[in-house]
Image 1 (cartoon, rainbow, N blue to C red):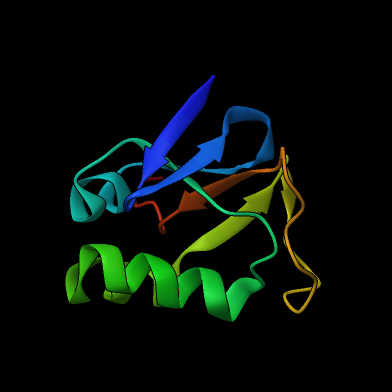
Image 2 (image 1 turned 30 degrees about the horizontal axis):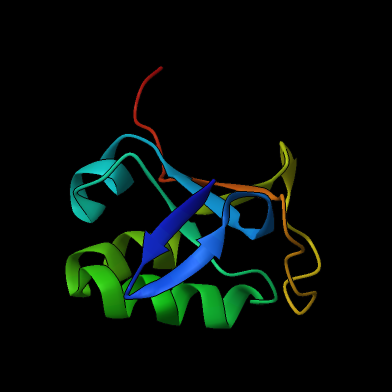
Length: 94
């Protein structure tokens, strides 16, 4: 199985899945999308901003990022294939 992404075919097992929640989902206009592996945090944010614009960029500046359910601490480390990144904007409540 493969996914079409920006004109390139990406093998379904060779992707990073980005999932958006709450305001990040609204800003991106999608619930999730595939990206190629190998991106670090700054390159991931740049790619997502290029795809979805400044509205999402503003959310990404204050969002938390989970990699396979764990806070992304080493933001220079490239994301391997098969990884899931959750984009969580700040939540209001109490």
